Image 1 (cartoon, rainbow over the protein chains, first blue to last red):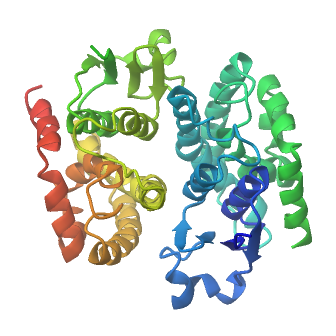
Image 2 (tube, each protein chain N blue to C red; image 1 turned 120 degrees about the vertical axis):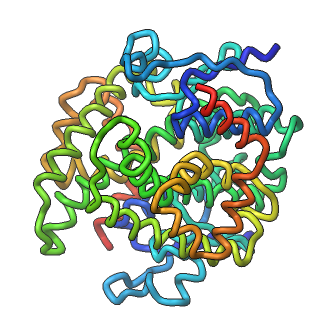
Image 3 (cartoon, rainbow over the protein chains, first blue to last red; image 1 turned 90 degrees about the horizontal axis):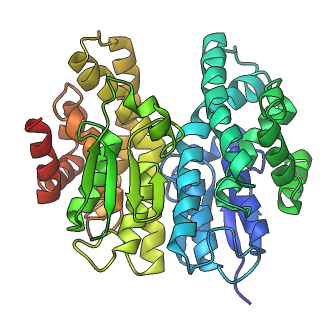
Length: 220
Length: 215
C-alpha cells in the first residue's frame, strides 16, 4: 500500500483547495498537514525548504517535493492517470485534448485568477482580517472579471465545459475563487446573470469532490 | 509541411515565447502579422482564433490554440524528437520543470510584465512611465529573484540540469528588462546574472532579436 501523499496548508486557502479537489477527483489518498499561518509557520526555515516563496500549498509524494497548485494538479493527473476521473487531464492518447485543457488552464491562471483573486481577498478575506478595502482595486478588477466572464459565456454556449464536453482540470481550477465570489461576496451575480456561465458553475460546484472540499473548509 | 502558423508579431512577449520555441525545435512556420495599432487583434476574424483578443494565436493543421504557455507545451511534446529537447521524458524531472514554469507564470511574469510595460513599452508608445509603479514592482521582482538566486545555486537551469521551457518562458520579458534600469536586479545576483547571459545567448533567441531589428 503506497504512502499517502502529503498536502501542507489549510483547506480555506484557495490554492490548497485546488489541490484537494484534484486529489478527490483522482481518488488519491492524502494526508493534510496543518500549517499555522497565524503563527507565521509558512515563513519559517523548515517550511521554506519545501516552498521557497513561503506560501501554501506544499506537496510531497514519496521522494518528490512540489509547489504551485496547478503544477501539483498536473503531476497528480499524470502519475495517477489510471485511477479516479480519467478525463481530468486528457485521456493520454490525444494530444489535441490535452492541448485544449492546457489552453483553458492557462486562461484560468492568466486571465481569471488575477482579477478574481483580488476580489476574493478584498471582499471575502480583508473584512475578516479587519483590513481596509481598496475600492479602486475592487472596481478595476470587477471590470476585468466581467470581460473574462463574457468570453466564458460565449465559450460555454459552444461547449459544455471549458476545454470540451468533459469536466477537466481547466474547470476544476476555477472552483476555489469562484466559490468564494459566489458564496462570500456580492459578486456572485456576475456568474448567475450569465446563462451559460451560471449553468456551468452550477454543474461544476455540485460535483462530489468540490462539495467535500467545501465541507472541509467549513469545519476547519 | 507541418502547416504551423503563428498570428502575432515579434515585439509581443507572448508571441516571442512561441517563436523561440519553434526556432529551438527547428520547425518551419508562417508568421501572420497582426497589426495591433490598427486593432486587428479585436476583429471578429482574430477573435475566432483567440476569444480574449490577445496575441498570439496558433495553428497546426486543424489544431487552433491560444495562451503562449499552452502552445509551447504542445510544441515541446508533439515535436519532442526534433531540435532542442525542451521537456524531460522522466516524469519526476518533468514534475520539477512544471513547478518552475508555474513560478514563471504566477510569480515572475506579473512583476516582470508590469515593469516591461512601464519601462520598455510605454516609451515606445510615447507614454509616461509611472515610477511609483516601477518601484513597487521592482521590489516584488527582487523577492522572486532572491528565490531564483538560491535555486540557480543548486541547479544549472531553473527547471533542472538542462535548458527547458522553464527557462525559455522568461526570455521575452527578461530581454526587455535588461535594456532598462531593472537590469540591476538581475546583474547584482551572480547566479541569476550568469543564467540570463546563458539563455539570452542562445541562437534561437538571437534570431528573434534579429527579426525585431529588421522591422
